[in-house]
Image 1 (cartoon, helix red, strand yellow):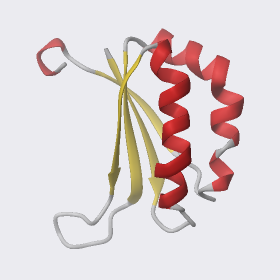
Image 2 (image 1 turned 135 degrees about the vertical axis):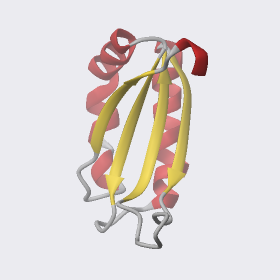
Image 3 (image 1 turned 45 degrees about the vertical axis):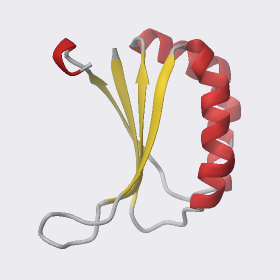
Length: 104
């Protein structure tokens, strides 16, 4: 299993209502049949030393494999990625992570 982290930096416009009400349901609808197990949205609130969070929103996507993610992105990417300007001007950082067996 892998975890894809999509991290939206703090600062630029971000419409959380649109994100939660339209974008994430679209992601789940299109990608769940293709190997997406979980899509968890978290909102950054700060750092341990009281500074602002470097990322305003992150979504953690758990997948069967990197190959399943790549196939889903290829098939539905234009629709899903094309929706991003409707909720943010931020350029997301995306990271693919392995989930060791003990934590999966």
